[in-house]
Picture 1: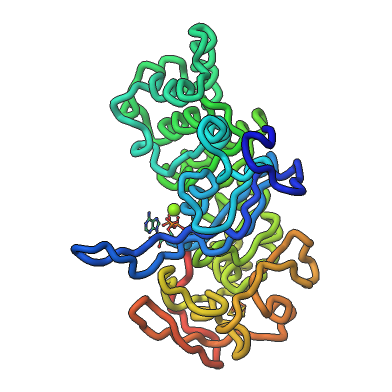
Picture 2: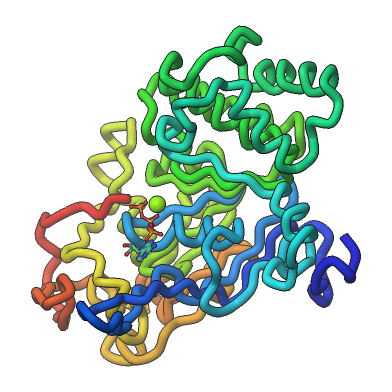
Length: 383
Ligand SMILES: Nc1ncnc2c1ncn2[C@@H]1O[C@H](COP(=O)(O)OP(=O)(O)OP(=O)(O)O)[C@@H](O)[C@H]1O
Ligand code: SF4
Ligand SMILES: [Mg+2]
């Protein structure tokens, strides 16, 4: 890619494939029968900075509606950002036009949660695979294309006979393999997989995850994987970002996030993951969060988590939005970033948990918290 094709980003690190800076995606809320008035915005993604290194798997977790899919789409240029930028291989995607954008697009592909709805039921597998190849001029020679189609199917563990069949003739796991083959057909560098196994039977999930890992090893792919199953994310990811209400609240190397979760929200997520050893399960910390996720159309002030945080303090929490920062906590490596004003004091035990009493508002739960005993067993937070 030359500077003529798009704006190169200054000081680009060649190890970084994707660089997201200050990304915001706000959807307008419309009202009115005659005149379409914009009465507000859903802040689906609201200030995200992250980098994805070449060849790594970056896992993204967080509750439903926190903006994971929107972030994934914005990275793939499928959702225009309201603010901020996405640089792919050192080039600002927004600066690309026409042929340069089309060429660059083939380098990033998406694998969807539900392969049945993402594959046109009227097309054969051959036609589905050819579609993308044609769009990018990768089907010039008939014999080479023929070989390539067979290679693609073999890479995802399907027989060549699958080419003549239609999506409904396959099982869910096989259809996801077709979805992956389709993404691979244009030889991408980055694949964004949005809940790639959550629609599959548990027995099939491991096969598809192993396939994604094998393909990464063979083809040097980079992945952004969105998944709500924390066990899946841990298994597949090198690094993990935890999202809450449109922003990252914690980011770390995968093992470290599970061993040393530092943000109160991550600690609550981790405490809801079942541990196979009953002795550990009985003694470990369990953090129960009360209240729903506030509306992204009207997010809380200051720290967005303050309406549900069992460590919330009188100062800073509801007035200043915490930055995602490297924290000074024993055992935390420099890549471990946390968006909490009090991460160090919470980790050291200087600050202790208190009860959170949610108040019902028009947008869900929000309200003041007080000090008191351990919280009642209301609800585990889940993703
Ligand atoms: N096209 C759109 N127009 C308006 N609002 C949208 C649009 N797409 C997403 N949203 C809203 O943006 C917020 C984030 O949605 P998103 O789908 O990114 O969340 P998610 O984390 O992927 O959730 P899930 O885990 O349920 O898939 C939600 O409140 C959603 O309703
Ligand atoms: S900044 Fe305050 S409210 Fe936010 S997570 Fe930290 S302690 Fe909780
Ligand atoms: Mg989603």
